[in-house]
Image (cartoon, rainbow, N blue to C red; front, side, top):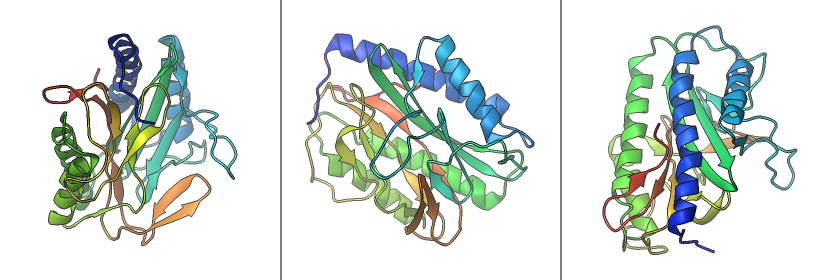
Length: 252
C-alpha cells in the first residue's frame, strides 16, 4: 500500500531524517585510513541514541538471513550495499565506502546513504561518485506531484547509461516513513510515464547504486557485490513529494 502522510506524520519523518543527515555529515570527518568499519558503526549507534532515536537497520530481518547486526551498512569498493561492519575491515587510502543508515524516532523512519572517499582516490573512482550523486539529483528532480515512478527511474537510468555506467540489477529505492520499506519500489532504470502516480504527501527513499563494469550482482548473505569486482557507489535521500519541487528530508 502507498501511504500519503499527514502533516503531523511528515514532521516526525522530517525529525528522523534530520538525524540521518547530521550523522552522515559527522561521519565524513571520521572516515580516514586506519579506522575500522566497526568503529564507525559504534560511533553511529551512539550518535543516534544520543538524539533519542534507534538504529533502523539493527535487527532488521528478511527471510533466510539472520537479523542485520549493525546500525550502519558499510560497503567498500566493489560491495554495492549491505556491507557488515567489522573490527577486521580497516579503511585504506584510495578506498571508497558507501554508508547507508536508517533511524527510527517516535515510530517514524528516515533513510539515506552517501559514498565517501578515503583520502586521495583515483580519477576513475572520483568520476563514479560524481555520476552517482548527479543521478540521484536527477531522480529527485523527476519526483513531482502527478509524475510516475517510471519518470524517476528513467531520469536516473538514462543518465547513468549516457555516462557509460550501470545501475545495479534489481536493487531499488522505496517508500519510507511509517515503515523502513514501503511501496512503491523505485527502480534505477525504467520507462518514463509508467508505474504508480506520485502524489503530494508521499515520502520516498530514492537511491541509485551505480557500478563501473556491469549491472550484474553477486550475493553473499546480506552483502551484494559487483559481479566483475569493479567499483560501485551509492547515494540516497529520503524526500517528500510536494505540489512544487521535492523536499529533501535527509539534510542536516
